[in-house]
Image (cartoon, rainbow, N blue to C red; front, side, top):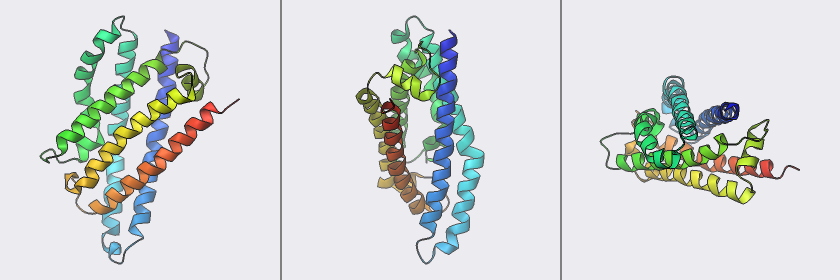
Length: 220
């Protein structure tokens, strides 16, 4: 079972790296949005302070908990001889804590008319990624890094790309919910700035992920 722990650690490292990159990108995008507009100098320090406080006290801790819940759920299923039958049970057992740590839950107004859409999208995201994670954790071949792991788990670039685009689709659904009605966000000021940063961040991250996938599967 050493391969499961090895794969667990490789995926964990990758997910934490992606988290750090996303938070840094978010700060950069908010800075760029605040540089546009005559009156933004008034709310500039407030929005930046809010984002920095959120990253320090909410985003990192919540996302790290989500990563652990996802990986532990995957590991639990890999070790289960009846994982197909246990899949839905594991989802129902672990999703409440997963969603509690999710930023859409923490930053979303629970009384908002679209909050349940937020929650359902988060659950579908959790299910989809858990299915993908199982394939990664089950790899027994000798691998040295996350790229090796992906190439073994997903034999072709087309299969890996299909999985990636599915995950990105869930992310975009979440962004669209916020774009439709920013009042769902529990933030004191700067909702429009944050929404613009979310959209730009998603588009840039999508390009980055697709490029990383191409680099992984184009290696000789």
